[in-house]
Amino acid sequence: MFASFIYDLDTYDTEKILKRFSSDKGNEMANYAYLRVSTDMQDIENQKLGILEYCNTRKLTPIEFIEETKSGRIPWADRELGRILGQVQAGDNIIVSEISRMARSTLQVLNILELAAKKESSVHIVKNGMIMDGSMQATITATILGLAAQIEREFLSLRTKEALAYRKSRGLPLGRPRGQAKSVKLDEHREDILKYLKLGVSKRSIAKIVECSPSTLYSWLKRNQL
Image (cartoon, rainbow, N blue to C red; front, side):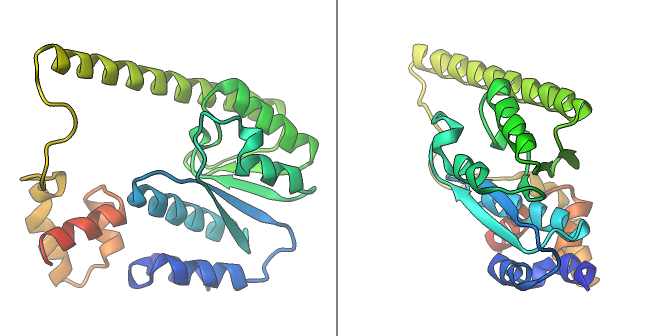
């Protein structure tokens, strides 16, 4: 029942999908999907769709989506994630799109996983398809993933600061240029996208073929009035 529903996501909006999942009585356990809200709405939709597909495959329903609006610099215990961990019970699940969505440091991630394990609840990492259940293997994996995410964040921050300092020292304008970009990545796949559309291939399937998110493809189609 669920498979056909998920693969036809391009014919439904996210709100309809959420209502379908919320009304399902598949399991008695609670499933909390934690979303980190940013200014990029595409990112939010991608998080939701990824979590929905993951939960559909594993029959984790119903799902309660909880959006985090506070800065990641605020301690996790003072954010929505802290509230979730305060109310989870044995057998409940917390689902996140990737480990870096939980906290900004490896130590914080491990603290979160430790508390979840003490409450006999599991943390699901959608991107890696992993379940952190408090076992030694899961803890080691979480440490590695958390360190990798933290290092990547620090390198990105350093590169951004260096690039801004370089432009500022030469009197160059900072930030993105105004107006719409002349070209985008999907432009090089234009002929293929048009061909697949004429053949009746779903937009979601086309997005997989050209290796982009469905929301990116939708934005490109709107930009080109297709």
